[in-house]
Image (cartoon, rainbow, N blue to C red; front, side):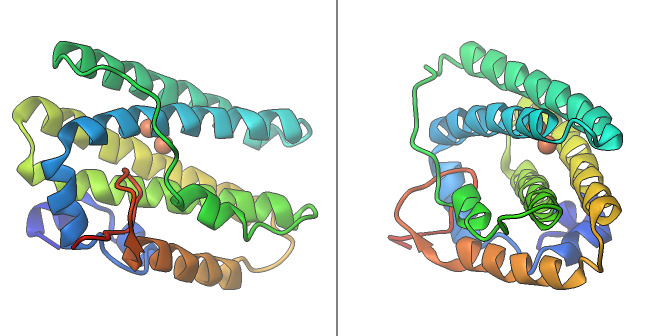
Length: 208
Ligand SMILES: [Fe+2]
Ligand SMILES: [Fe+2]
C-alpha cells in the first residue's frame, strides 16, 4: 500500500482486513469515475438503511439504537454530499445493480439471535473497514475537492467500523475472534476473486 494511504488508516483497521485492495481495482476505479460516484451514493444510502433495519429489529438494545441512529444520520449526510458533488459534475444519478459483495457476506449470517445480530454487526464492521481502506487508497489519485471529501469519509467510516465492532463484542455471549476470522476470509475472497461487475466493493476486474 502507498505510504499516503497507510498514514490515513488506523493500524487496527489495516490488520482487521485480510488483504489490501488490489491495484487492478484502483486502476478500474480511476478509469470509471462516474460509475464509482453513482455506486458510492448507493452505498451511503444502503448503509443508512442497514442501520435503520437494525433499529427496527433490536428495539431492546439501547446502545445499538443510539449508535445506529447516529450512524444512519451520518450516512445520509454522506449521501447528500455525494449527490451534490455529482450534480456539480454533471453526473446523472441512475439505478445500478448491487455488487455481489454485501450479499456475499450476509449469506453467511447465522439464523438465530444473538448469533444473528453478532454476525450482522461483524459484517457491518467489514463493509465499513473496506470502504475506509478504498477511500484512503484512492485519495492520492483524486482531484483536490474529491480528495478532501474522501479524507473526511476515511475518518467517519473508520469510526463506524469501530462502532460496529464494539457493538458485536458487547452483544456476543462468547469470543467473537473466530467469527471475525471466518468473515475476514470470506471478505478476502470477494475482494480478490475476479468480478465481472465493477462497483465500489467489487473484486478484481474480470478483464484484468
Ligand atoms: Fe458513509
Ligand atoms: Fe459508514
